[in-house]
Structures are given as structure tokens and as C-alpha cells.
Length: 267
Image (cartoon, rainbow, N blue to C red; front, side):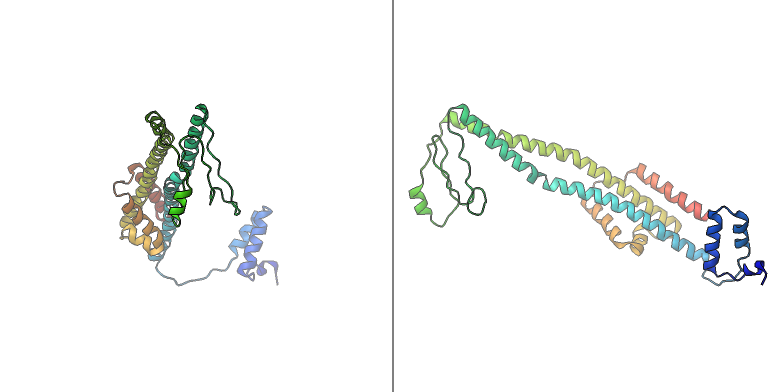
């Protein structure tokens, strides 16, 4: 069999392998010959005017869903931080308050606050008996089972004077400082959350308008056909932040991207 006749006998897999090898070694005449000798075939298939837009809207829905998920993830991350913020700062408030109290006592020639004991389980303060000290530091006991015995054994501290009460009131300052810090940090995050939410709603508004113009359904219907969880995320955002509106600049930017992609595919 002549060599040229062999080119008609290659299987599609063999032809593809030979083509890639020829292109890799920059043998362009061989590559052109492999493409030119590929047998022609006739196919029957569904209407491309239906199938191509169907496949492409799926691709665009996947991209939009990914972008919306990223934005939603940022929002949830910041929401979660705001939710745990009091737990992160309350311990600092307690440490600041106790440090202030300890410093005040030492500055007034009073003994420092008693340190908690460590019980047999290694838990500080659990079942620890605090000794009575000079000054106003009455003993506390959280065990309510034996109140009468506890009252008999407790060594009460003296009542603070008016002047001392004024100082005690100032011990609340660290808590107020931390409360102010919490409000300030929250004040920083809330605008960011709203901005990202506005971006997400802008993407959604662009997607909705695009779907109505190109495929005749709204964005929610098109997204639920391909990725229902993302449609639910957007529904959740609109319910959580009903006062936030889609950012017009983000909507315009995303609408232009969608139109550009569609234009490249269908002209």
C-alpha cells in the first residue's frame, strides 16, 4: 500500500496522536497533510439554534454561580466574625478589669486578689475555696445545695465605704472600653458586608436582565435550572438585607461581561 494511502486508514485516535507529534516537532507540512486526509463524514443532530444557546447558558450560569458563591462566602465569613466578636473580647475585658482591680488594691497597700487554686482535674477555680482577705472581698460560693452550712462557715467581708464605692464604679471602665471597641469593629465590618451584598445583588440583577433578553426566562428560573442552591443563597441575602440595593456599577460591569461573552459566541 502506498504511503499516501495509509493516511486514509488512521483511526481518529491515531490521527490525533500523529498530529500532536507533528506540531510538537514543528513539522507543519505533515500536520496539514494529516488534517487534509481526514475522511469527511455526514452527521445528523439536533437544531444548533437550540442546542448551542442551551449549552452556552449553562456555561454562563456556572460562572455566575461561582462568582455569587465567592461573594456569599465573604459575607458569611464577616457575619461569623461579628457573631463571635463578644466571645473574643469579653475575656480581654475580664483580664483588664481584674488587672485594674489588682493594681488599685496594691496601690492602696491592700493584699493582691487571691489566685484560683487548681483542683485535681486541673480546672482553675472549680471547687476552689477562696480565703478571706483584708478589705472588701466577701467569699462567694456557687453551690446551692448546702446554703445553711455555707452561711455558717462563710467569713463575710466588710461593706465598702462611699469613697470605695466610687472606685468600684470606676472598675467598670475596662468593660466600657471593650464595648466601644466592639462597636467600632462592628462598624468597620457592617459597611463591608453591605458593599459585598450590593455587589452580589448587582451580579444577580445583571444575570436576571441577561436571561430575560436572551432566553426568555428570569434569572431565578435560569439559575434554578442549573444550580438551585445559588438561587436560594440570593433569596437568603435579599431577605437578610432587604434595605441593600444592587450596586449599579457592578451590575453594569457584569452585564457588559455577559454581553461580550455572548457576542463572541453568537455574533
